[in-house]
Amino acid sequence: MILSYGHNALSTESMRRALLELSPQDAVFGHFEAVGGYALAARRAMHTFRTGPETWKHIAVGQRKWANLNPAAATAGQPLSFEEYDRSRWVAEPLRLLDCCLMTDGGRAIVLTSAERARDLRHPPVLIMGMGQHNPSCDIHQATHLAGPTGAKRSIERALETAGITLSDIDACEIYDCFTYTVEITLQDYGFFAPGEGEEWFKDGIAEPGGSLPVNTSGGQLSEAYYMGLTPLSEAAMQLMGRCGKRQLGPETCTKTPEIILCSDNGAILQTHSCVILRRS
Amino acid sequence: MQYPKPLPQVTKDNREFWRGCKAHELRFQKCALCGHVRWPASLICPTCHSKRTDWVVASGKGTIYTFAVYHVAYHPGFKEDLPYVVAVVALDEGPHLLTNIVGCPLDQVKCDMPVLVEWQDITREYTLPKFRPMR
Image (cartoon, rainbow over all chains, first blue to last red; front, side, top):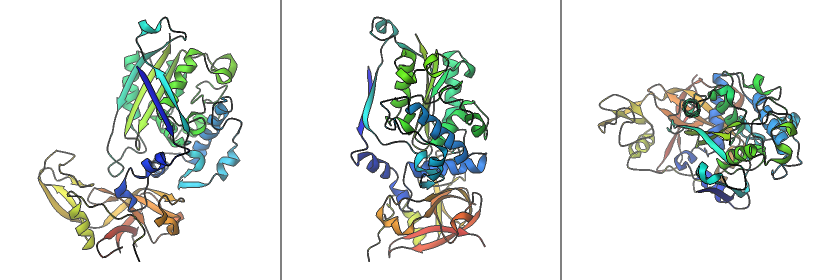
């Protein structure tokens, strides 16, 4: 089976139009998805626990460091400083332009098959170790989970259970990062840090090249390319196959050679969540 | 002059809500079985799945659950409003309503701030419920 995604989101109007037409009733009040919805979520989080641009800038700048090791990234060769983040224009406050994912022309595909069939393939296969899904599913009007726990919390419990591992067995994460805040709330709901401890967790580079828990090692959707859930999933598979060149986890980037990588995906405004745990074969 | 922004899309479910707005009343469905007051309008109660529904008039008082300050106009009609505030208001009766905060300096809008409905008659047919800080 082939899982694929392709879109000319940058050079056509189709992605913008699709997003703007998501919630016609809310357009009456000048509210448009997706950035508007995530801004509402991020603001509620700022009210509920200690977070905000001081946390999110570490995510934006940290992921850019990975993108700078990835020649395929849309922002390759464009380093990012905290000052540039701070100067980045507001889109829907509290989110700045650099809190938002990219619009990209391109696509991704992965081949899914049985472990037996994969044995003779040219590349070493990567195994699906565990999966979990949870969908709070109510829309922005009724949502009371915008500052967590989101669907990520129950998804990870199920995924770890099916994989038969604990969180400390995870070597790296590829997190769906439509916005910087999405990365924070996902890792927080997964249990990597307590609510409000995100800034402390990110600020010393734990998620960056050389860090002990690399996150979004291609640059992610913020700095590599937006291919929906396939940005994280394909990067995890490539890392476990050892096909990532200068950004390869292991001695190349002064990180642990990964055995197990955790991927996330979420839909709408934190309404759906899915996680997949992949393992080197 | 023609109204430059998107107009409400009236459906069988929400017709009574928009009729209420025209009369400067916030009308919501209340489940006749479990008493849950709901929004958006729907055929069945999301809590107990009953179809038995009454309409009730809300007080127009609530608090800001969350808000965003728009600095980009995704529809040309909002260009001259920039920057403007979109908020989810938690009404005293329970439902959350997506709306705008008006009559408040941007740097003074806060989560959990008490607000009161303020009616804006936008066309002969439609009135929008917006909210301003409670004095």
